[in-house]
Length: 98
Image (cartoon, rainbow, N blue to C red; front, top):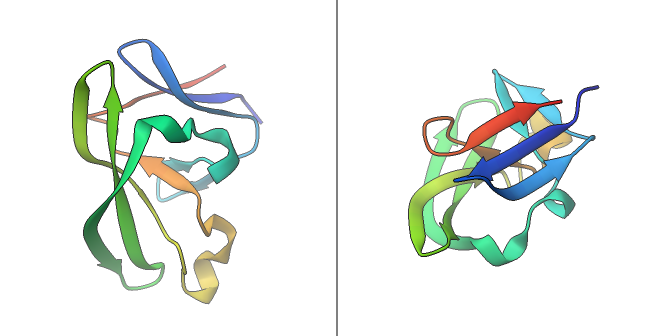
């Protein structure tokens, strides 16, 4: 499995060799994110098979990206493999594989 990295303006905010791919999105394990950049928001959304997603705003060097990442704190059974894992909007965060 390739190494996955999430960056904003060249600053790494998540880094892992252990991730899940769901619907074309990379889900990073919670232990792979740099928590100091992430702030929970009150935003939620619903997926019929994954459940209710919660969101993070990401702040890096004074740049704030609202609701740029999401995760499923209590997913439905079919999505248990991504419980707590964090995914990013590709138009806000650069995801690379090495």
